[in-house]
Length: 267
Image 1 (cartoon, rainbow, N blue to C red):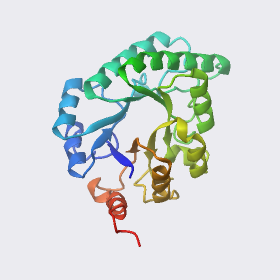
Image 2 (cartoon, rainbow, N blue to C red; image 1 turned 90 degrees about the vertical axis):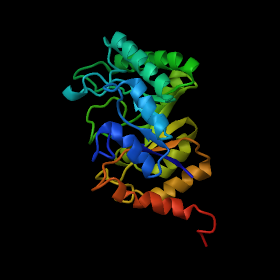
Image 3 (cartoon, one colour; image 1 turned 30 degrees about the horizontal axis):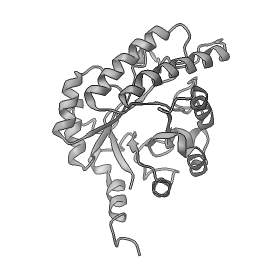
């Protein structure tokens, strides 16, 4: 059965961030993820994880000026030193929290930018990140995002991401496959998952088109959960969605799935 991680950036917003760890644990989650930890003390986050028996599944490297609209800098020429410094910050937080997966956001394509130079910068930065993370047992992830939600993002398709991974050639660089983004951008989720499965390092879910619970919209999530089991997926499935109303009240989809996996529940 997939191991689900509550995304504390989007879920449990009814309470302050540091209280969301306990709220997720109370609902039966044993792992969490979020966008960014950097406004909080790393040791405080580690203590919240320990106190609630939670695993930190994933977070993102610093993205640049998020409030101003930046969405990473890994592909941006001239930002290499900043990328390297942010990488070190992310690795410190990962070590403190026991997090074994870091997402390196690619960035938005500047108007008039040279695509070959962007690509070369991206590959070089990812090689650096993978090399620094490898001795710590940490996997670096890259994630294609859909152009409706994040117009201009450098990385847009599963094939592009897996081609980059192959070019970098690092065993600890993998693709974060978000079913929500992939459905909007490309569709054909089952076949894309099967085709690229060996290079997938993390899964995320949300209903399409509104990014609510995964029992809402056009994706058949139970089918995909079963396919993940059939393929032997041993990683986490991040619940990166915005609850329609209360977070706990909206977890019926998870309760139903868990009940269906109990011995004797299928006839």
